[in-house]
Length: 183
Image (cartoon, rainbow, N blue to C red; front, side):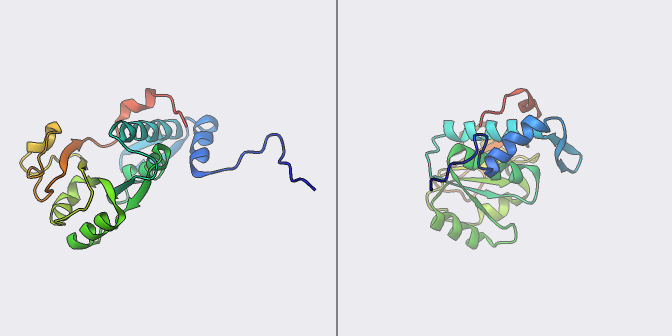
């Protein structure tokens, strides 16, 4: 007997879940993070924006992207954005020591480290980060000294990130809600 799925059958993956939620529940609240709120449509648009930015930065299928953030909207969005871009998310526990962060980044082969501004000093103390070529700081606080805010960090700016460019980003851009979600 041949197993033929129903004509309207579609497997529900996490990415398909977000796409469908944006279609069906577009204006309903999806994320509440302090005073910030995201509808499902805004959530999907932000995940798409970040996925496109990662691809534009050179992410190839299977590349690792490490995130060192507390439980904030950016980390939840990363759980969808990184796989949408074709990458593998390496979510780092915020309670890890600097040396443990360095070990995990090196061992996982992460090419990007996205770190919350509040945890920048912990990440900077990690020393060797393996293949990490770019450290992206998210949050409302600029990196120490602010030298890397223009995206031209040389590894010394931002402290302790030898060989990695350090750039700054704001928390999730609210204007992303105007972008269409393209899963």
